[in-house]
Amino acid sequence: MIRMQTVVARTPSALLTSLDRFHLQSKATAGTLLFALAAPSETLSVITSHLKSRFPRHIGCLSSPLPAYRSHIMCAVALLDGITFRSTIAGRADPQVGRWHAARRSSTRQLPAAQSNFFEEFHGDLGRINWDDIWDKSATSSQEMMPVELRMARPEDVSSILYFSDKAPEGIAKALKATFPHSHELGFLAASTPFITGRPVTLFYDGEIYSDGAIGIALQPSMGHTSLTVEFPGLVDLTPDLRITSSEGNLIFTIDNGNPTRLLLAAMNKHGFDSRDVLLKDDEFYVGVMSNGKVERLHRIISGDPSRGTIALGTTSAPPQGSIMRMLYLPRRDEAALNLEPTHRNASISLIATPDSIGGEPPSSVLENDVLVVDGNFIAGSENGFVLRRDAKEESWPCTLPGGRARLCWV
Image (tube, rainbow, N blue to C red; front, top):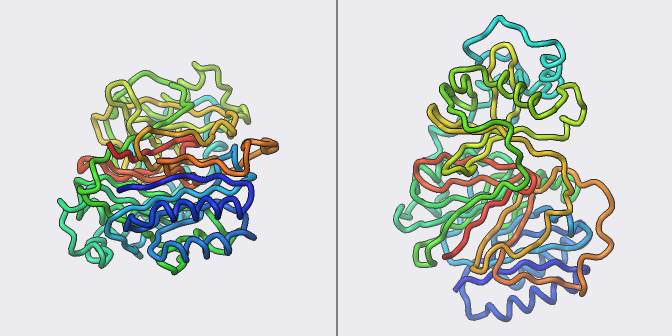
């Protein structure tokens, strides 16, 4: 039996009362507690100690509150059966600024100065990253470094894998795909906590606290069939469907045999953007991989070279040649719209990418009572986003689109 709920409370005592009720209702259910907690630093000790005492077997992390509830305490909990694990596989190193060298098919024709200056200003040093210096070096050793708890598991014994990670999940993602290629894989990049706990991220695993790596649970088919979907609210199309004609690594070299950066700038002009407008610093531009008229995979554009044309994406693997794509952007919007709504009538785990920063005053009152409980749904947010993979044909990819939501649902 799967049990899960999300609790939003005004006070620690109201939250603990709800967690005690969840514990009493779950006493007959064996399993590991999965939790994501967003709370002020002064309340963390009492809440995490309470969770540890009630659920000695647990996997958890500190998360970010959804904007509409940022003045409250938010805790998502779920009881699941599976193989728990702790990973120390290294991911991608932090970017080092270097000389741009990977672009191809350069063009000597120059853009208007305003557009050229805009792209340099908008992307800054990201366009000059030396990707050879930061590329994930863990691929050759990831299988040998597979968490010991998973080494005896057969691929057919694992249907879905959930994990909480630091901001570099590439190593564990590659290892999981190599060993369990047909499983669903959903990773939550824990919230940054240097000003809350003094740690880059804060992970909890059976009484231990970690600042890096990943912790997770591999679910077996006996727990029921699951579906893994993703939603991208608020995106606006800049282009119609286009075909990628050349790509490598995280770079797209040509689209419809043309210059990708010029295509993006032309689309921006067509939609009334002034490339010199500072407003664009608050907008985000994306490449969406299309399937049946819908975006099924999304990559943020992190840099572009107007003369050579190459655009770089915030992923380790750009869509391959032949992929159908659109260019899209996310305009500024009311962040409080990212609220806590039930996501599915069946049990589901929803992971949401929240904004990096939240401006304005919080709502004066969003709860009629001291506590709001959403049964059957585990809902957690992080400004660092999530990663997912749905089958053996797909590489794990990250999503940081504000409001982007991944949903693992038991059907």
